[in-house]
Length: 303
Image 1 (cartoon, rainbow, N blue to C red):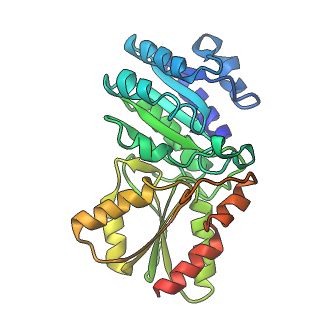
Image 2 (image 1 turned 180 degrees about the vertical axis):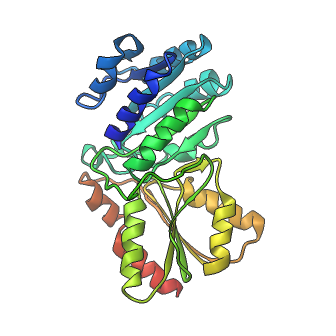
């Protein structure tokens, strides 16, 4: 996703001289493509994310569209006050990019696990939230952020994510994308779990279970209409996200409670308690109960 992001950002910058990129002393071997093409619009702010956000707000007040880039929690939780007061309160065109959501930096330990970021960002005023599921969606989300006025949050994986879309989809802000039609259960996915959802749907198909897969690359605004249409067919719902409480599943639960929609609902997510061990992304996700076999097992139980 990181590579897709920086390529899309460099392309967008070619036609938008107001577009800037600030980073928190990282992104080496990733951000050079932008820095080399636009050295006057790229600044390494050092390990000072709060200052980076303040500078981004100042640039935005002067008419710039500014992307800030750092690891998981650092451009979000570390500088939440600056995001709330400097960026969101003034509805500025600052685009906060967090690389390494979920357990992408699993080997670095809990300080680098991005488990609460979407829960925090979705309560910020004026914030649009993108949580792409593969590099194709990440490239689209970058382009959408660059063109959209106001604050945005873009959550990326660390790298190596599988490309799931076979061609360039017609994605829209605030709209889910139907990846696979089904009739027995809906698998709704966001925040880096698209490949997992598709793998589970394929495994279920081998057992004669028809799973519909919806991808939600935008969390705010949220496409409640597509979710409702799918549930009207299947009556059963599994949500997948590489995130803790307060994110995708919570948005869905709030909708189901208020709308009165009747469905069998099982959320799969991370962070029920802090992970005290370090390890690879797949290992930690599986340990937390977020893997293809977990999705398949839950679907069997629902049926």
